Length: 329
Image 1 (cartoon, rainbow, N blue to C red):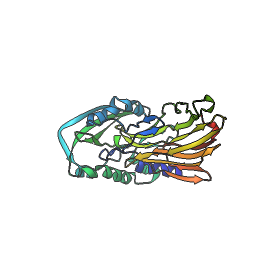
Image 2 (cartoon, rainbow, N blue to C red):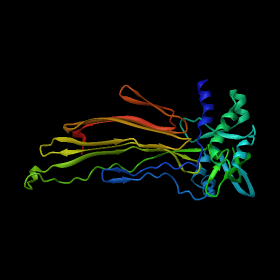
Image 3 (cartoon, rainbow, N blue to C red):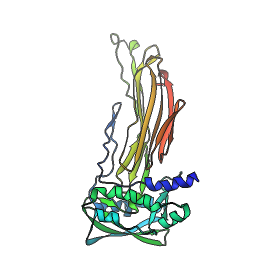
């Protein structure tokens, strides 16, 4: 019964584009002598670009994996609606909304009507849904929104339409698109160590040379995109440890840096946490535990003994490792 309830709760947390919010600022990350810039999504131009992402762009395949296809859209000329009027419009009980419930393929959904949800689970699904719709449109209460009619095909032989509200710059709201999310995992380039440089310590005698050694690691980057491919949430972690290898073969840990950057827009969630223990000097040690995740519902992290446990993420990872200075290269 709890699993069924959790499915319905997804009505509150399925991703909404909410483009009126400022994009999260993702700063450049320095790893040793590398700079990795995390993109926060496409450059926004106009509402057609937003729709084209799902119509004939990269989002099309993702929709088709859930048996949904946008087959046509058209701007209704000389037809607008104020935001506060759009909020009051009655949503039909037969209206479809995407519900996510596949723990293996987190981007796969099924379309359910409010009538089906209400009768099967005995909840007022429409009330939950309207709350989210109002949150999206509240920034447009007195703005004239243009209307775009979208035609959809589901399961090859079911057809329906939605009324998408747009401004010149962006898509604002649609019953389907405002509830679509794309979870991705972006694997970074191979982690690199510092290039070795000989450091002369006594009169240039190679017998007294010592070498910098290091360990650099950046995790996979977990990203939750809205339906127009703007970033909704992002999380990852990185570790950088450096030290010295001495002529007698011993090694030291001299420096350590570690962080779990994460950011999210309203309607999305991101978490990142990393803890480490460092013993500097010759034969030093370094160990760390991490938890990073993104999604469209609230995520919690707790410490279970010496490791993290994470709940509620649509995509993410927990783990950790430890090593001594002798492992550095």
